[in-house]
Image 1 (tube, rainbow, N blue to C red):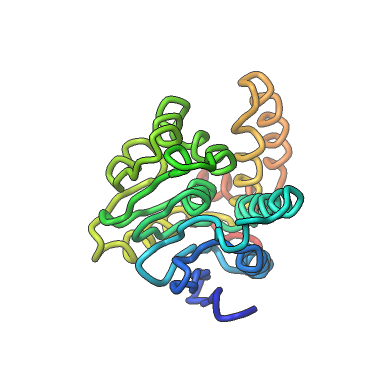
Image 2: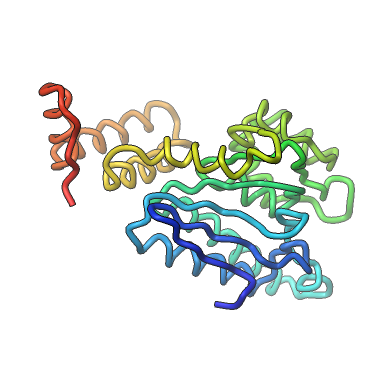
Length: 255
């Protein structure tokens, strides 16, 4: 792994930092592959949570046009598939993943934020799907963005291409919180601590089940969730949680 992606473990949490400020953390094919490898590596550890952060003045400017200008149809499709594999990896690792956003997150950079489980943004951050005012529409970023903010707001972002501030992003559901810049690191850490309470294995199954039911019709979602919840009730973690509640004691999670 090159110095473009940094991994740092601090107690229960791992931070994956995009460290390509000279290119505004633009998502070249190699950079996407390195980020995917980093999430897989973190996902295979006993870390409780993962923070996606960035160095430099921009969180991520999206796809690197130096890779794409003049590229063949097949090469562009392959790059978009590599990006999709990254966001699927973020959602498939067992840990809770929080984006810590400063500066601009545009196009596929905004897609990254939308694809994390949770997100905290500095008040100076901005979010955009700028293809709507250019020559190449943000088709794939819109998949993730729309699933966070809903149709009309996603359409406004995509069709205008305008930059939306962090407070608007929080109001719309693209991020969980917009906080003063000086509080960004602490607010992200605090949210991750709150989101990683409880049994790690139960949390991992919960995250998997959450994404599996999100986009199903309501009846299908209940059918799926009933089976998962009934089966998971038989796990040692579930039984310990119930026993601890009834016995009015702190739970001890199986290792």
